[in-house]
Image (cartoon, rainbow over all chains, first blue to last red; front, side):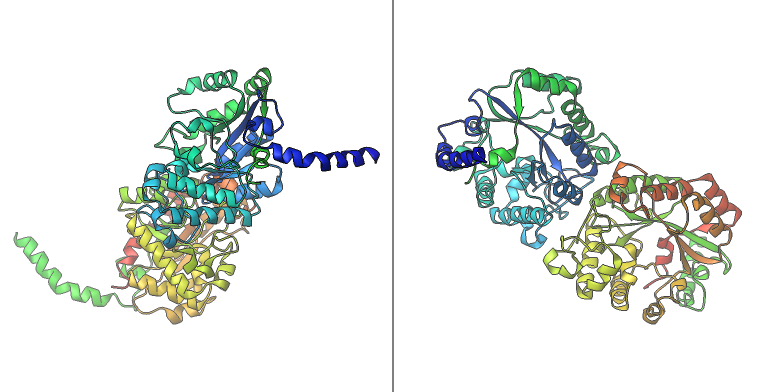
Amino acid sequence: MKRSLFTALLLVILLPFSTVAQDSSRTVAERLGYPRDAKLVIIHADDLGMAHSVNAATIKAFETGLVNSGSIMVPCPWLSEIATYARANPQADLGLHLTLTSEWTSFRWGPVSPTDRVTSLLDKDGYFHLTETEAAAHADPKEVELEIIAQIERAKALGIQPTHLDSHMGTLYQNKALFEVFLRVARNYKLPVRVAKSWFARADFLPAILKADDVYIDRVLDINPAVAAGDWSRFYSEALKNLEPGVTEIVIHLANDDAEMRGATFNHPDWGAAWRQRDFDFFTSETFRKLLQDNQIKLITWREIGKLSHR
Amino acid sequence: MKRSLFTALLLVILLPFSTVAQDSSRTVAERLGYPRDAKLVIIHADDLGMAHSVNAATIKAFETGLVNSGSIMVPCPWLSEIATYARANPQADLGLHLTLTSEWTSFRWGPVSPTDRVTSLLDKDGYFHLTETEAAAHADPKEVELEIIAQIERAKALGIQPTHLDSHMGTLYQNKALFEVFLRVARNYKLPVRVAKSWFARADFLPAILKADDVYIDRVLDINPAVAAGDWSRFYSEALKNLEPGVTEIVIHLANDDAEMRGATFNHPDWGAAWRQRDFDFFTSETFRKLLQDNQIKLITWREIGKLSHR
């Protein structure tokens, strides 16, 4: 009893200082309570809700504890399945993968908002555009705002309490107008967004728009089509061995290499069925677990980062 | 030259009579040019476009020639895949499986028309209702008309030339107001509709609404949950052996018993993944081919029936 009273008093005294102390002169790692040289990593699986194969593989990966974050595509057909998981696992670090593209030619989706109010987001067939470039070229920022708010509201109505926001295929980072909409909506919902300091050189509008209370991480790391299938494990292993201190999000794409994923990605091996199986195999492996240990890498989540932002 | 001139003249003389001769005093079998006692069957696979598994299994079944007709769900995510097949196979007997329900709890879809114009068709989550009963209880017939026209127009825009129309889960047969809308739209598009004389006893509004030029078939035959999995082949075999003359549509549901279908139907074995695999196995089997031969059953299509209707 005495001890908990003491703790309570100490909190009352220290809390105002700790709040003030979350200023931008300290690194995100430090603000999260870690040493400046800590290697903090989020292992983040994109595209939840897209397909049963993606949901099944990602949930299985979550159960290993090695993949610890993910984001959900609200307009996609398997949203209900992942919403059921989210409601049953409220501690899971699940964000929304705000979606303005529909990239597989055999398997498509479109807006959550009434289609006649977001016509700039539609291709000739009435779905989202196939690529982020087309989407950004046509998108009216007002319609983007309407649609991404509709996606957040639908997720919340289904019982998903998102811990963060990011953007499928990076559409919302394609230009300043889209990123402004994205950040405004995120601030209103008090949610952190995937933004990395390592992107500032190639998109100088990013630091110009960010304010002091917009938390950004140090870097996003993802594999790319230049890596041969046989080099998958080596690519990730080298990346982990050479990881710099700070907060890194490793963005991965999980699915089973099965009929459904092959059907969706049949003409697009990049980010295709076999690609996603390779990601699953590496990030649920003992090799990966050992790399985390050997390199003193600590897994953190967007939920922790969210506590620093827009407060 | 003389011979073709003679044929042309004969056609000019006979054509008006043959048109007049397509009256309702003759059976549909006779009007199609078959004897009155012919056993004519359409083997019809429902739910195309719903899932990759459904598309893949049905296309494989079409290739055997034993399954010769199907209908497409326009609001579903795999529409593009089956539209590609339809464009490449313009002779295929493909209709539209007009869709106003979204029955799998993990995997869902909604209207083609702007959602705010068809609110009576939506459940609380913004998808179509789960059951045909709920759909019919809430549906505003004007919104149903808007939506089914939108489905037909989207199909046509994707290069599908439907040969017939039917209704997913029978929603459009649930009451007179819905069936009137269905028939009016079908007449405007000059397309035949799945209606069977054998239904008249349980839905007396059907014959009351049908006009002389609305062609209807004799019966629809489908398997039901009362049949045990082990009795699948016996059920269909008996049905084929005891088939009465006239036009029968055997409505089946094909898919592979794979991860995607199991994910969609996990809590609903009726019309589920294993059910659809059993249908696939029977209707692509040599047993089935032999039953058609032994019982003098001839396969016909909706394309033929369409030539008799709304002309």
